[in-house]
Image (cartoon, rainbow, N blue to C red; front, side, top):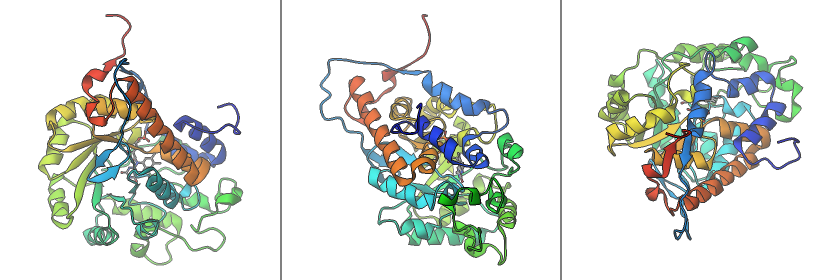
Length: 391
Ligand code: FNR
């Protein structure tokens, strides 16, 4: 997109605007991946290598993209993925994104390490949202988080399993904010701080405003500053978690359990045995172990192994409605998007996310129609092929 005056449409349009708007360290925190970012690029490249097979002369009047994800009605098969610290990208960004998800009729997932608390997000509307959990060493805190979420109407718990340790993200290292839960110390005065971007002063400890630590605010010791908070969260992450801990989780969580971060058919099977209703095939958007396979390339094997025993979502590199079509064709029930909504909310706030999701929907409708089908259940494996130039 050559100028900022044009109307942004695609995830990439929003990305470019976000790049101009955000302080460098924050844009890099969202945009970057682990190590050499090989998997980050592969997530995209492998989607692009899947060719939709155009089919013609069928009656495609009345295309319908709707369905459900984890029992939540969805106008199209996509959910907003949890994005930690997402609330730094625009004023109360998680609230803005939840509004947009409601408007579009798709699920929104709130990260454990959000800026806006679950109470604040729940106040947006009666429409339910999903809550993402990282296992914390202090299980009493986990139990209380789940109680709070349940009380607010959350019925889908997204338990993330691919962050036993945090992948080294070199852009964050270079920018001096490495450690996963990024950015806090930069929020104070200085050229890279929000003070340099007055439009988005958040109540995170700037100019005498109180810090907000989202969902975890009540558990953080008094007088903690943002840097200490980051360290506190780092200490709370529990790398000793195994499938056995899911039994405990299953015992206290009565709603749907979605296990996010599975990248092999063996682990997919273990997740279902441990009680998962849904799994998300994911490499955390290329932010954890660089070099691993793209999530879309693992999807067909996982779909085959599970053969309908659990719902399957996929994320990592989904950038359009056409990608939703590709994911469905390869065996996913739906997909999640992380960076696309993060870019959109950074670029244009709620309107950005609304616009992005509208574009996804239009694109999915066109993809269905031009592949000769009218609903999601008709999107089968034979509607895509692998890119190759001659046999
Ligand atoms: C994430 N992701 C993530 N996942 C999670 O379970 N909890 C979290 O707090 C976060 N935080 C987070 C922050 C940022 C800035 C990004 C970009 C991603 C991973 C996210 O949910 C999702 O798996 C990926 O973003 C999907 O890849 P794409 O759509 O970004 O390519």
